[in-house]
Image 1: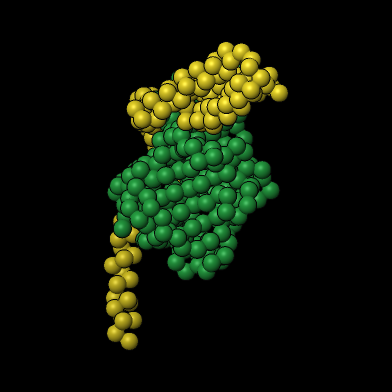
Image 2: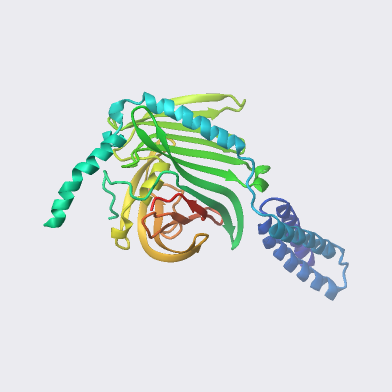
Length: 136
Length: 250
């Protein structure tokens, strides 16, 4: 039984340590908590049966390192944007390319209402009608 | 039914609008920020017409770039009045994966000319051109998001549902949007009364979940700004939270 909890504790502690190094560090809290529970049970059994506690200490040490690292990253690491220069250049190039494609599209494909001059005319023409309706 | 006449006028989306979101991953209450998503609108003039340029970008935060770098660009060129799309582009760069899709719409023939550009194992790009038949009113994903914002949700009753045909990866699919009701939530823009919409994809495994697993919150005002979205993914759930909103129409 003690060996089972030691093995589970070591697995959870290693997982916590690995997760703590990755950007998913906050999730390391979950295996760290599991490692503490498994380590605690293994420590209790070891104390009762007066068996060596070296492996339990290893579990606690790894868990402690992962917790310190995760807490540090949670407090001091703010979400900063990476380098988006490449993306911005891509955006600019895409707009220029799109203009050429849109120019090539047949005029019949476009709604006539797109033309701003047409929009203006429609608005002014419709105004007297609206006024008439309001008077009624 | 949610009201959205075919020739409805655009009352919610203005030129120069910029919405910035934080995309995060939530597992058992532990939240980690992954990427910044922006939704921008602009104007593009050609010799024949003036179009509304809808642009969505996603970029991972610096801490993620060494592990899995995402630089995605989604664009749609639409009619500023009816939001009918004419050109769609999707340029995605996720880790070592690259894909480019372009749709040129032909509303007369109810079809899109699709161009797909991918990289092979040697890193060389190759093109695939296809013509895809679509139904009338089918839009790309970007135009659909903006179209949902332009719905007359204030006229809808709780439980009303509307379907939208969306073309994605040369395949037409149906998105169901259900109006769940109004809810006040706290956002980076303050406390906002929102329209709560439940989204689901018909006959697809993605966005499946229950009726309340994939939610979209739009402010219950004339701008209908998407302030919060929640998506169920196999392990945990993804969230999109608004960070800032500028250049709103109303």
